[in-house]
Amino acid sequence: MDLSVIIPAYNEATGITSVLERLKPVLGQLTVTWELIVVNDGSTDRTGEILRDIDWIRLIEHPVNLGYGASLKTGIRSSEAPWVAILDADGTYPEQMLPELVRQSADADMVVASRTGASVHIPLIRRPAKRFITRFAGYIAGRKIPDLNSGMRVMRRSVVEKFFHLLPDGFSFTTTITLAMLVDGYRVKYHPIDYHKRSGKSKIRPIYDTMNFLSLITRTGLYFRPLKVFFPVSLVLFLLGLLVLFGSWHVFGRIMDSSATILIMTSVQFLALGLLAELVVRRSGR
Ligand code: UDP
Ligand code: MG
Image (cartoon, rainbow, N blue to C red):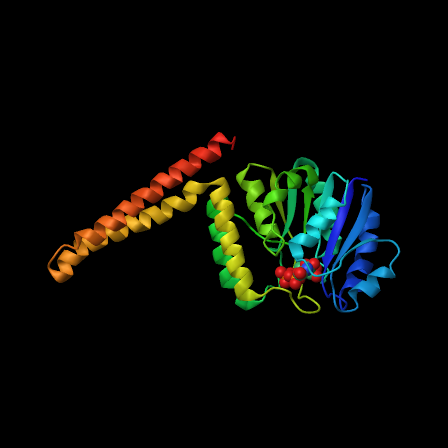
């Protein structure tokens, strides 16, 4: 077995059948041997019944809903193939691009189908947050990231396994694996695709999941490139300190040197912590 294709599905009764129907001939075109693993993530609609009737897939079921990342991890754990591909169950990704991604994986550790093609349907309200998060992640990774959390990608399993302990159970799975691979110098390729409007309802909770993304990027940043997180904080505190020092004299006619001292001292501490963290990370061989 060369490739395990993994599809996480939580309450996708409206779309799962057509996704699998479109996928079947595409899998037939592959020149590698494959298996299809569908993880039913504790669905409460008819998803489970539908899937149990399909005999050409390998079905794994979570007794309760565990989350997007948890479903992927279940799929990856149960696979022995050197390569895994992931895909949503909602019909948003162009299944027919899978063979191209697989072809491109020959000289890469991960090939991401990036939603930067001619026709991309990303809901308007999600765009500003998405842009901000992507920029922040790009800064940590030191590389421009065309698509941070595409749910369609082909990954080398041995590399994913290296980062298993970092990978979260929720939607930040894809963000985390992207950052981890980029920061650690693995070969990540991007291939532009179209992205369709989903069938059925999105499982994303906008505020909760955005906070989650941010906290995960910060934590991943701290884990791999701590100075990139500590240094800006230290700089802001330092500049604030200077501002209070000179501004207070200008505005109030007296120097608020105790506030300024606290700010500048804290800034120095952040810088020292950042350097120390960086040292720890380098010593651990990164
Ligand atoms: N999903 C899952 N468990 C969950 C939430 C989502 O397995 O708790 C699946 C869902 O069925 C879909 C994929 O993960 O196939 C991505 O979810 P969704 O499409 O809702 O996220 P979006 O694409 O809107 O970011
Ligand atoms: Mg989706």
